[in-house]
Length: 234
Image (cartoon, rainbow, N blue to C red):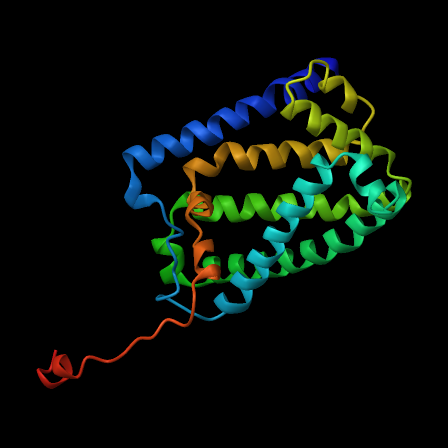
């Protein structure tokens, strides 16, 4: 299966990166009005509050957990007094919490989108596809937790982290590092990379325009009623 490793863990990561950035640029340049999350809140609010919040908190936590977990050199967390085994246990516990929250939220969102006829009829095919794709990825990730417990020493985690850094540093031979990694991890990595590949072509594109700047906005936003307009009966 050397060809499999070489393609998916040597060539495929760069294909996904190119599609991610060039696709996002092309969509912004040619179709800016589609650059939004396309909320369906006005159709039905039931299940949206808890579903959306659990999903977003979970997936944001998982994203940054994977980002720092895979790209942080061992010397950094060793300097912080964290051993490889401790980092593995931390990843399992914290990742499990975020994955559970995201899974519950995704379940509620899928149920809402499928069972409500108005939301279902007004949804694009990619809307349901992307949430189901993430749902499957969550299941794969959760299924890998027992494997991580059995490898509590974190040897596989170290190998995958080394592979990730090698990819970002354009080092040759990165694909060979994952030759003996369990299949559950390989599938999880492939699905994760594919998420970046399809992001520019789905509603996930709104992560680029998330209003993070509002967190640093000074003071409260004050909204007052215009009495003159009210008197005119508008």
